[in-house]
Length: 52
Image (cartoon, rainbow, N blue to C red):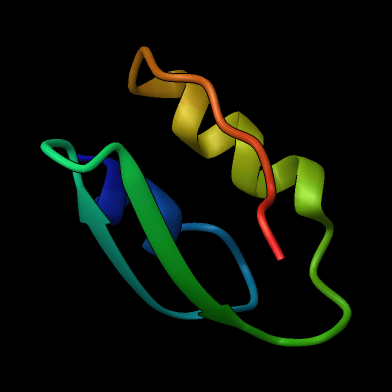
């Protein structure tokens, strides 16, 4: 669910999400707008933060 939502964001190359671990790893273009990734996660009923 979350993975599919992230993959719909323009500039996302790949995404892996684990609801069990509550983490998603996203490979994307450098110029991606981070807010769009968070919005995609939010549409699935979850919240997100960026971790370096």
